[in-house]
Amino acid sequence: MTVHSFQEHFDEKIDNEVSIEPRDWMPDDYRKTLIRQISQHAHSEIVGMLPEGNWITRAPSLRRKAVLLAKVQDEGGHGLYLYSAAETLGITRDEMIEQLHSGKAKYSSIFNYPTLTWADMGAIGWLVDGAAIMNQVPLCRTSYGPYARAMVRVCKEESFHQRQGFEIMMTLANGTEVQKKLAQDALNRWWWPSIMMFGPPDDDSPNTAQSMRWRIKRFTNDELRQKFIDVTVEQAKLIGLTVPDPDLKWNEETGHYDYGKINWDEFWNVVKGNGPCNKERLETRRKAWEEGKWVRDAALAYAEKRKARKEKATLAA
Ligand code: FAQ
Image (cartoon, rainbow, N blue to C red; front, side, top):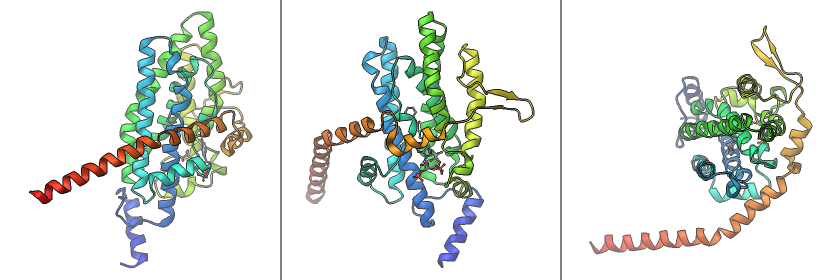
């Protein structure tokens, strides 16, 4: 086959919704885009464990502690599936981790905000996992097979995460005056960063058009943001909380909520490393990597020893 016919074969698969698999020919830029998106997604899961990890020892009951612990463990698992999916594209786990630690690879802006009160655990589950599901359910149909398959399990777990967050918010919102205030304060602080999570507006998003053509992305950033707002505003009403956007208004003509101006300067500032917790998050990850070196070394030594023992047994048989 010529490169031209490889390209035609690839395009045909994309057009016919046949997934691309690791050993298939793919254009270099398709591979690069996937490595960028999947590794950044993996980093987001791993860094995303930190804001909630901050509250595990301070959860208000044993039940809340057990649930939060399970949720944070799930996020670690999601990161691992995603690193494995990215490895099928020809990058190693160590290279990806290096890119995270050097600041070359991004992770979601949302995890650079602090978790100040217990209500933030509710807001993260409800809003951040809610936004993650809105973005990731369509990724179950993304064109690259290993990424799509990883997303199926991730989405099932995210849906449990979203419900646990909503349940925390609902409990607080129906609680004492102080609890209701905590819930409203958390919504006030997490609302705008959550809607920024979907990425820059479509006319300022350099990757969306090509990723839509390759069917990596199934919806644009603005389409997903709008869906999230439409669903979440109704949920806030249900529990008696107010979304902190004075311009939010149901639009009869479009059948969607109109919303206020997003502070994109704040978004880019956080993406560039200057958010409230960027330095702390990266520092914590680098330290965990260094301090975990002996575990990786021990696991590797054990695996090598087992392999040698197996080989010896095979030779003897
Ligand atoms: N933060 O052209 P686009 C979770 C960057 S998982 C930081 O629109 P694209 C689970 C973007 O990378 C959350 N950077 O890019 C959880 C690009 O820069 P680059 C993560 C952002 O890729 C819940 C530049 O801006 N989810 O929450 C952000 O087409 C609770 C231009 O942007 C995923 O990663 C941002 N928010 O669209 C864990 C889902 N947005 O790379 C713990 C998969 C954009 O060229 C607790 N990813 N940028 O240098 C995606 O769907 C896409 O990558 C988008 C961005 C939609 C995030």
